[in-house]
Image (cartoon, rainbow, N blue to C red; front, side, top):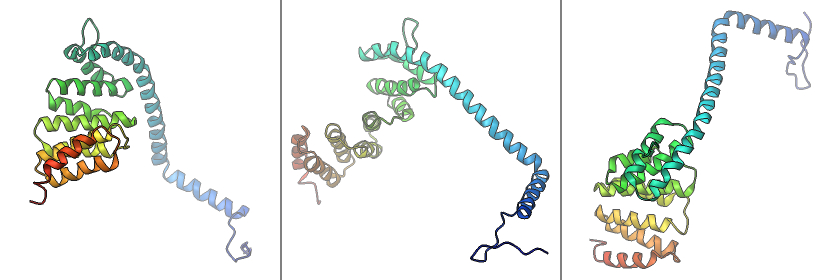
Length: 233
């Protein structure tokens, strides 16, 4: 029997012709024993890659059509013709149709946002919440705005606890000088409605301390003063 090759530390070096041949033989035996399973796994991976490529091709082909449809209906939305914007007019698809028919596209995602706003204005709060929750965005302004609007819908439904949850998400997400104070003021109002005067006072104080240049500071001081008698009771 030949002496095994070792390195200076005494550990066996397996990268010898004999060792490599042994490893190759073991791999061949393993493959033959598990041929069906391995081929099945390989086939599944190939199918997954092909399916994903096909899905992306389909989505990309739909994006242009969806964007054209959305650009046609945004005019009605901006003109406050909410029913036309939601359901379409003059042969144009509405926001509800675009959101549902082109799922996976950026246009469908944005249509959910517009539809949520329109439905909220119409007082259809549950539908508004559903569409706004279906919307997602990496844009710091739009994401926080959607969370705040969901809070608005819950507050209109007299569900202050849910409103507080969403206002907190809006105010904590990528804080900025312009919109965060607005979301904090909404949060404080919801906390007042939930009979949480201490929390509301603390939130008003955050507006005053963290955003001293905001136009919301005047109201924050006023409402905080009105709560002084309730805090601590």
